[in-house]
Length: 82
Image (tube, rainbow, N blue to C red; front, side, top):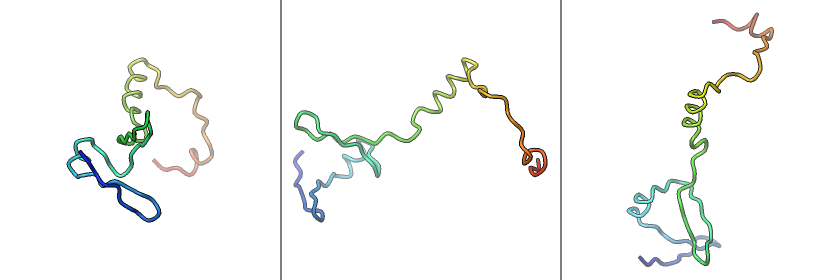
């Protein structure tokens, strides 16, 4: 597929067809890199991607406990209402 490079302010850009954006799963933010003379655009990795799977794996191994004992504060004892 060919596309024209267009002026966007002082920069240049390429308009991507909606179908291409949907097929690749692009959102508002993308990763862009140059590889061997080519521009590669891919979906940006979501923040905290994989955290839920990692938490489940830790729980399955019994590694999801606090590292330190809780230290009660005056807020816990006097101000907090359950």
